[in-house]
Length: 503
Image 1 (cartoon, one colour):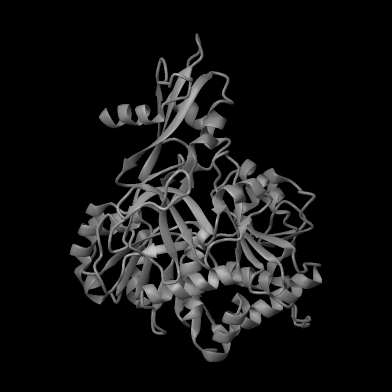
Image 2 (cartoon, helix red, strand yellow; image 1 turned 30 degrees about the vertical axis):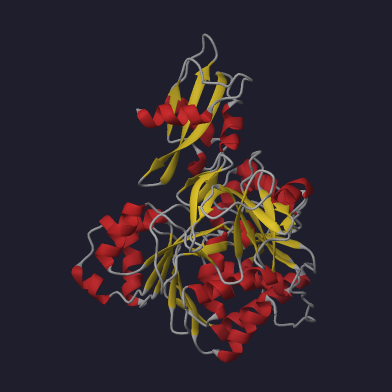
């Protein structure tokens, strides 16, 4: 079974049921299947064929969902692009993926102008005007049916780009079977039924959002309310009430806001939410306690990564939920703690978390060395340091790599440091993450200036914003006379973090 099979099965079983709603627009499962088929025919007429790659640069909308499935229906591979990225990052992804077509909108006309007319992209499809030659999204739909493309379950369905330690994103190749195994296991873990109703406001390009808030609802014939953004937050509250949402998936920062926000008692009384799921970043224990005390709704913390399609574990709905733990591995997924030599450690011992199961990607696009370093002996090495207790609950202790998670988005310090070193006044630079109740973590830039040179926080921030997405720009800059180093000259980030945390 592949993703197209699942969508069209839903169309047959619940054709008249509303699948998704956006603003005042609604679309049934039957209509969605028809739109996918017609849009896919249009893509085929443009020359999109099996094995091609089509990038999607869209904010949350129904057209994103239609595009995703139409691309796959045509036998091609979908490449969702992080909408928060800047020119250099998007340019790299579009070139590395070899995308022949880009589906976008006038929301991104500025970045499209900056990217220019990329020779690799043969066709631009846009909702609204963009500053390159394009085909209007609505005109792609074609009623002339094309021959069905045979899809193997083990073929790549989507390429999810995840930030890399070298500053270059890596494209995780996720197959149909990877994704279907993950939505099936997630469904069982949180006991999703056919009457559940979802709200989607996290960005659709994110692996967690699309798997849990689009693919999973299709699998269980659920309703999905699509919101363009988490802001204004009042609209989220209204949707929870008026759309009778039962499953609420968000990042820790959203639950933190909800736990402290003034909400009318009538709204609290009318809520129909039966379970909340937190992912993409660590959930502070205090936030969990405050939220559950105020709303009396179970909040389940989970853990995952793009390379695992993405869900690995979640705290159980019908058993003990342990604060500080990311729960139990999903059904069919195995986790272990490994030492530096790849040997399994004993219960309670600390080491690198490794994952095995049908949800594990088949590799990184164009990166055989990274693939070999990450996939070893049937295990996906996550780069996260943790432990597993006697009941199988997983605890994340630290990250082996320097990953910083800001509002659920991955940030690797090396990428920011490379930009800082381009500044002619910078001699040394280090970026570290420190805990923050609002954002989960925030990046702090520590800089040693070249002798005789001067700079300010404002100047550094402006410089970074020219090259990086906003969430990657350090929240604060400090200028130190020297950065602590090891005897071999390596910057001691652990010592930098200690100094910052003691201030």
